[in-house]
Length: 127
Length: 248
Image 1 (cartoon, helix red, strand yellow):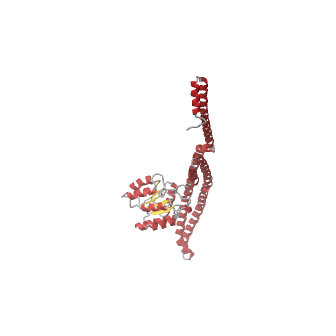
Image 2 (cartoon, chains in turn yellow, brown):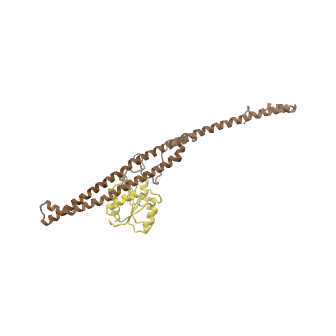
Image 3 (cartoon, helix red, strand yellow):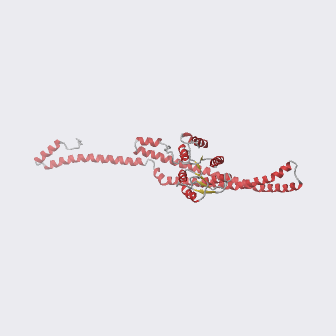
């Protein structure tokens, strides 16, 4: 796993972005940027060479599930691995995210160990 | 629509004609007036009844004079209180993370210094060390002890900051409890209003209905009653099970 990969963390709460950033930094990732919803994230993804997206579901503006769908629709972004980290815990939603092409799904509250596990799994499958 | 008591009767009409034919104009006028007055009485009674009903409805409407105060003051106040809760919790989270982020490099630094000393230290412990190396080890250990002495009070201060940052719980707890109380009051008053103006069925619905939980794909936020619901997962393990059952 390339520790220099460029990661975008999308969450409307700055504290949650900070927690995820700290956890990722603990795992050795330092090239991290932030966005507060899908509408901010999408142009950043289209203009920047991101390697990985961590997104919340429930956000004002564009929600995480719609961001995921936009990413999968865009030929330049379709390959991007997307990890959802969200408090949304309905079975239908998890199935919906899977159908939309999510690479991993973590429900909040979560632990550092869970985050590491899912990251490892996602990049193991990709490589 | 014939109300015998108030409508003009055939007998009265015949009597009126007879009076007019006899040229008794005054008596005829009197008879007509009587009939007219009886009809007016009925109208007055109806208007009176309507007025009383309206008055009672208005009285009932003011079930709780607080309902006006609630919409004017309490609800905007509740919004401010909840915004305050968001502010306080965000502030606490940031204070905590500031302190933790300041602690982590101190911990890392100590770890690195100890790692650096360990090889020579291990040789000393197994009586396998040169005098020169011993001297330089002494300086290194001296360095570690000094840095440790400097860093630990700092870590202690930062940990105290983390501890103090948790004081939001008490304040936000009280604020949220007051907002819950207000929501209960508003609910009670709305049910009273429904009792007065609404149908029986609507009232029953209002008293027993719960928010619609079946909106499958709509974001709902944190689930606070997961153990009472069968449409949500109970944790990461269930998410993983569900995804693997889908071939993930």
